[in-house]
Image (tube, rainbow, N blue to C red; front, side):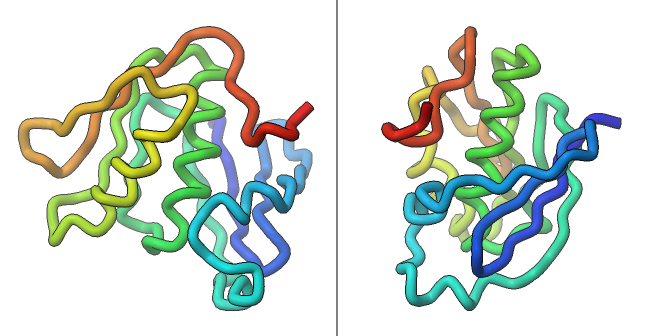
Amino acid sequence: MLGLLFRLRPIGLALRAASRSWYTLRASWIWQWPVPPHKLTIILDRMHEVPIEDFIDLHTFQPREIRIVIEEYLYQAIKRGFREVRLIHGRGIGVQREIVHSMLKEHLAVISFRDAADRGSTYVLLRSGPPPAASPDAP
């Protein structure tokens, strides 16, 4: 099964692709989400395996983890050729939905997004082609 394994920890985010090789993402990814550098120690050391399908269920992630998870998920979804994906955030009081929508408004790979009829998920229309760089200083 193709998937990603996320390990959130104070020094950053590591992911394991289906090839079983490890990659460490640049620290610049960490600074993009709203946690000041001196507070990175609050990130828990948790493992999440995320299959790359046309949807992702965000219920198992803490709100502070959502931005990193979505960033990597969208990158992998575009890489695999998905044009539309669904982010399942749940209805609740809307904390995760607000995080998801604020991130999607600024994401370079997102053409548009809309709430599903039940408002518990968001459909995202993605650009085709190679995934955009994670940050302006990316190679």
